[in-house]
Structures are given as structure tokens and as C-alpha cells.
Image (cartoon, helix red, strand yellow):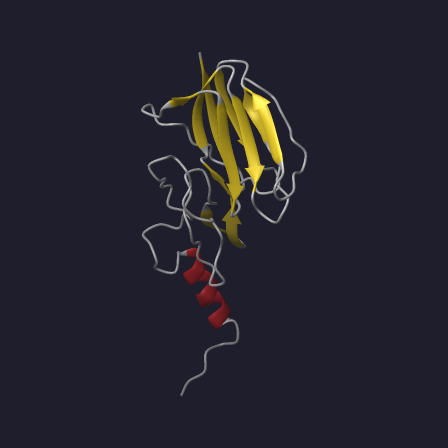
Amino acid sequence: MKRLPAGALSVFLALLCAAGCGSSGSSTSGSGSTSGSGSTSGSGATSGSGSASGSGSASGSTATPATGGVKFSTRPKFAAPPASAPVQSGSVQIAYRNITIQPDTVKVKVGSTITWTNYDSIEHNVTSEGGAQKFASGNIGEGTHFAITATTPGVIHYECTIHPTSMNGTIEVVR
């Protein structure tokens, strides 16, 4: 039996992972799908084999072959509420659960109170990343809440700055 050169197996495995290991037609992690309510349906976690698992409407990193290895984008891709999404008013609840946001897109009326609750055993935060209103919760632990009142019409993008690729969302505020 003929032996391969010492580094050949490592090169083969790196190329196989960079090509997506044959599990899908592209090398982009995350499926970009959402459930009917607009909430994300997976964790966006990476498995030990180098292929990505889970899905999320605004999550995932793009793997691109590059000189010297795989390059990952950590910039979040913010989703938008569908045009047909119902406009909520009063008290609107958003859950931080399993390092995802549920729902990750909402459409609310001016004057609505939006409350985030952290159900994870690790800390998260709620930080606006642009738009009609600015806010930052600071880190919140398990069972802790953070709330704002929507005061200005427009689109607000926000994220957990600790986990921005899997935990980012959009609030559309309407009159």
C-alpha cells in the first residue's frame, strides 16, 4: 500500500470543509428560512466537522475560500418584517432563547412597549445598530428583562453585541 505525503490529508480535509463537505449546493451557512411568525428556527451553531448547522433569517456566516484558509463574515444580515406582518401594539414580547431572537422581526405602532426577556443561562444585551431610536441595555442575565417604548416611526436594527451573527433583529415602527 502506498502512503500519502504527510500534509496531503490535512490539505484534503481543509478543501473538503471549504467546499461545504457536499452537504449542500453552496458554502453559505444557515438556510435563511423563517417560520410563519418570523422567528428563527435554529441555533446557527457550527458542528465539529466544519460544516454549519441550523438556520436563521438573519444569521449565519459566509464561508469563502481565501488564500490561507476559510474567511468568515461576522457582519449581521438584518431581516425585515414581511409586508403582510401584523402591526402589534401595546406590550410586545421578544425572547432571547437558545442564542436566537424569537421573533427576530416585528412591526409595532408608535407608543408600543417592546420587552426583551433573556431565557438563556448566559448573558446577552440589546443594542440598537441604527435607525429611528437608539438604546443599549447593558448585559442582562437569565430571567432579566429590558424594555423600550417605540417613540419614532422608522426601522430599528438591533443586536446582542456578544452574539451578533445569530442574535440580531429588526423593529419596524409605524403610526
